[in-house]
Length: 113
Image (cartoon, rainbow, N blue to C red; front, side, top):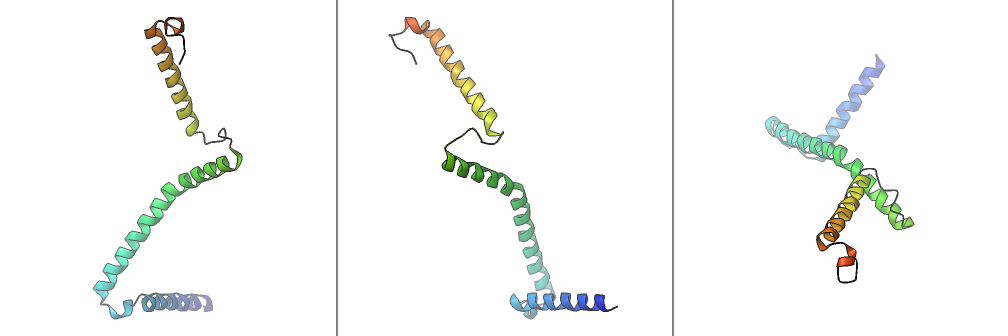
């Protein structure tokens, strides 16, 4: 029977500290409800945004830091690799199309792209 009472006292003390710290004790109950609702909404949005975007941002920053320290770009995440391969294939395709339109490398002005 001692444990619930001490827990209840601790919760009451934390609630009192919260009200005194943010001067909520001088507001009416409606004003407290509005202020607490806004605080809860903003805190919820912040937690949701952090849980959605922070892991990806930390991975990006870790990859960037690894690149700055080692200079090796082969250890980037698997999400960046298909983009790089696609870009390389697209450039190769454009160059081959350009050569085909010009009649091949021998038909040009003596230099290749």
